[in-house]
Length: 224
Image (cartoon, rainbow, N blue to C red):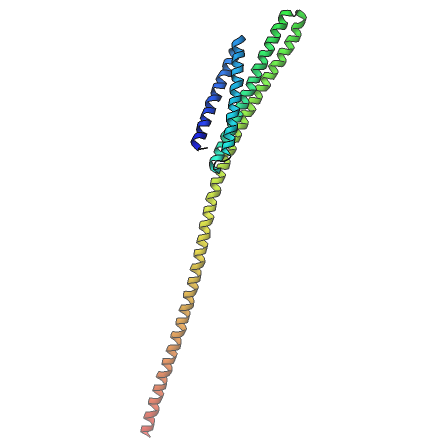
């Protein structure tokens, strides 16, 4: 699958999730048969989003590593949003079922049942608050996951920079080693040239001394 098609799938999924959350908001205000219809629609749309999400996950496995990391991060966010929508739907569906049940009981119940109904309502409120707490926890986990991905990306960038710096240092060390070898070779040549020059000077001095000696000896013989 091309990256363009994968992006289109993700756009469709985001749009579907937005519609689901909008309908969930409507569900909180709906009653009666319209609420039942909306519940069925949201259930169907959640199943469709789940199918698209699985397709995206399958296709991302064959994507390049750098692009796959981005897609996997988005997939985790999509799963978190889908789970929040599912939890909210379950809460609204349970509330709807309870209200219908309580409505039927209220018609047939006497004053003795009101205390029990009040307790059940309190339990229902506790469950609703717990569900909201779970949604907040999922949201915090998604945000933490996003921060973690950002930190990992920054660490990868810093690691690449350090590797490049190390390569440059290695290259500099190699160049310095070559320079030291060249300097040592030049130093040896200079010393050798100096020694040769000293030997030549000594030989020349020896020749000059010999010539002077021969000259003096020749004049001495003539004088005799």
